[in-house]
Structure formats: structure tokens, C-alpha cells
Length: 121
Image 1 (tube, rainbow, N blue to C red):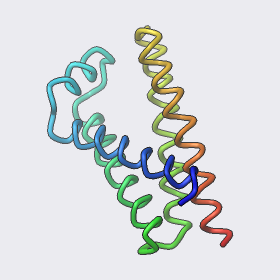
Image 2: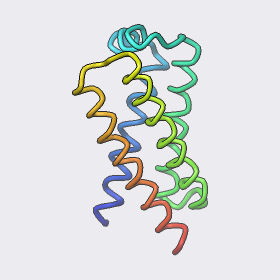
Image 3: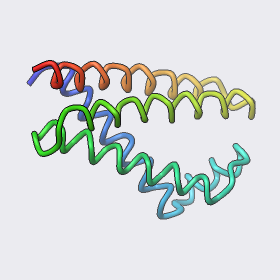
Image 4: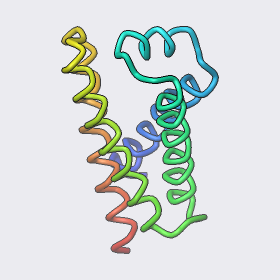
């Protein structure tokens, strides 16, 4: 198993956990949502997209879905995390939170690379 595949797995697990927290309205997630002034419906939608993307990445790595679906999910992760960084910047979130999102963005980009490698054979 390559290092980039491990990064893709960790990224999928990270997004799955964040998505589930949003969907079940975990206390920490709700506090974060409120601090960022994000509407509850949008927050749940983002959570659902995170979970679906994580499932697509996992299923692609297992060979259950075509690589282009994993690639599309990785692009979705990148779009979501850019939105998160923008929202945190607007809300003047602590630097550590923004930095965590930047690291997540890098992981999502590496995941995109892993999905591209699978698509290329």
C-alpha cells in the first residue's frame, strides 16, 4: 500500500467523521456551526456530502466503484474545504482552526492524486 493511498484513507475517515458529527448534531459540531454562522440545513447538507464523498473514496479504493467517481469525490472534498477555509476567514476563526483546514486541503489534494493514479491504471 502506497503512502498516497494511506493519505486517501485517512482523508476519507476524517471527512466521514466530520460528516457524521454534522448529521447527528454532535455538541462540538453544533457549537462550531453556530460560531461560523452557518444555517443548520446547510450544515447537515455539508455533512451528508462529506459522508457520501468518504464512502465513494473508500469504495473506489476497494475497487467497488470506477475511479472517476473517487476522483469526483476528491474534487468535492477540495471544494468543501475551500469553502470551510473561506468561512473561517470571514468568521475570524482562530489561526489553528484555519491551519487545520489548510492541512485538510493538502490531504484532499493528495487524495485527488491517488484517485487520478487509480484512474490512469
